[in-house]
Image (cartoon, rainbow, N blue to C red; front, side, top):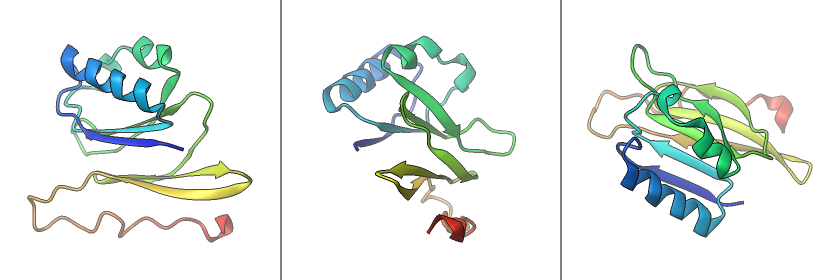
Length: 128
């Protein structure tokens, strides 16, 4: 299983999308996490992901703001989102009959008052 996390800053421009596509194709990634895409996901061309065999499975939630973390996976995977907030998305995935837990974190380091990005998320004990 391969993961790619990129603080892309402006996925709307063609050079950024081309660079991302080349990374995805050369590394055969299963999960891609895009930080700071700076665009609404509904304005992103769905066919771009589909042609690469990918799908969006979560966007983090930010009050009255665009999500700053897009969670994308291979079309054949079915992650289950457990929690999402302004700094993280937590999810599980069955791998070889074992539930595996993951956090995708986008945490600003410029604000000293930010909460711990893992502070509120708890995976259900029934998973273990």
